[in-house]
Length: 407
Image 1 (spheres, rainbow, N blue to C red):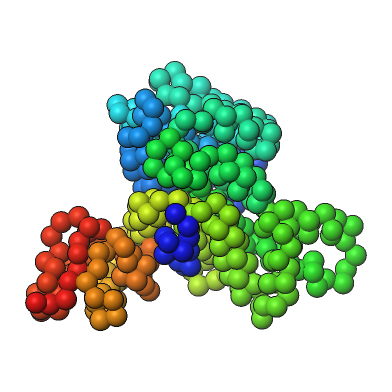
Image 2: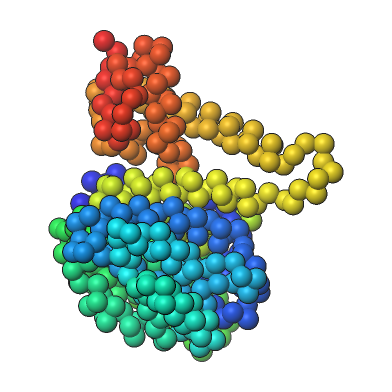
């Protein structure tokens, strides 16, 4: 299924977050002292999505085996003991163990981080989980991991500190080695990666800089390899400012990968602080509508966790509880989403006639895509039914609901 068919290739969820020091950095980095808001968002998405993914695609896999690859794993836990992405995924593997085998491969280049990661993996193996810690660059181990994943669905999480994996490695190794027609069973392949906006700004600046830089050409070539060509240079130079350049290059990258591998995609923009510049994008690729839908649900729920994590500490001496204020704000957001979805549904009915929600996902969720989720679609349909704007009562699986014009 191509990106156009998926109907989600242009979807951009604009989420805010903390500075993007990632799991692939040295544990001496201040990022590893405590869990940052951007990590809350990222980890919430993984926690919300990996279990449903493994549960669903594992039904069609031999022995229920699903492979998870973390190409830039880090130490597994932060120095304050908070779980990093490897620890969270191993918890997910344990929760799945009764009916699915989540076979986890964690790759980490930094030796100090690798020692911590190895200890975490050894503990998981002692508890009966399938887990592997590999030391070195991801490119060094990618072929062997993909060979081990043959015959099983694969979810790859690629979260480097700088430039992401090369376009060729992503499209020809990770996706290309797996049957693009096999979207559900043993060849199901999905990728969530970090496309670093800070790297785009920094490297793009070399195009206009007059300062002497001995590494200029090598750095630009590395960006070419990540983007699948030098097309990004034109986008950067033709943009009015850095935010526009980042948006155009990220969108162009996502669309090119989608076209090359026959997938739909989401992009999630994570900011340094609320309303400030984007630090990085999480870009997600799937060849199946189910994956795109479920990821949208996960992104919506993850945003709730992120917004709560961004609340300032409640010292207990305020007139109003921050939790109470938070819940009120969430209700206001949801009311806005439902109102927008109702308007979207009326537009689709007017322009296209009767439709199934799952087939018009992007149109139904226009303006709230990745923020709202299934429960808000149901609420919108039920409210329209009550006032006679549709013949659908909103009861049943939301994706299968056939929204009809009033009788």
